[in-house]
Image (tube, rainbow, N blue to C red; front, side, top):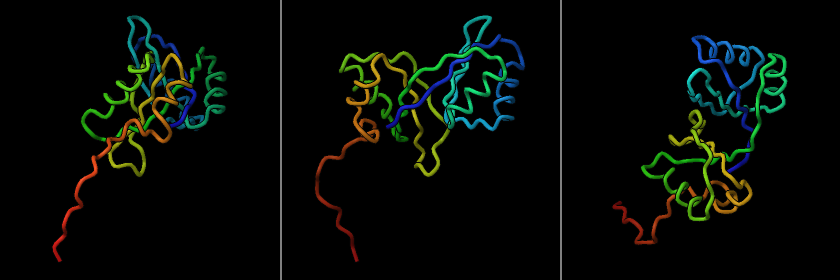
Length: 151
């Protein structure tokens, strides 16, 4: 588990606006770890986590785009039924509210898991609750007998 900076950019909800914004970010070589777009009538909100915060901030400033920055958690979520639910339950049990969440592009080298981007009301407490290395997402197997392999 790690923290990252998330950018939120408000865009006019018209065809081509998102493509133009992403095209400009691409021209500036801004790589994205995660991205989500939300509609709210005549405006939309683009939220993304860049691989390089400084490069993304400079690029948005060059575009004269207004943006907000927030600290978010990046939590590895295995490709198992109920894995994200368990993360949500752990946070809820400690009275942590999820302001918003979305998932990343597929992780390289992962076994089908993704990175969840989670904005919570108390980042430090959420890190403590979920533990290091995304341990909250992993399911624990009960100790049992080892399998017997035939030779």
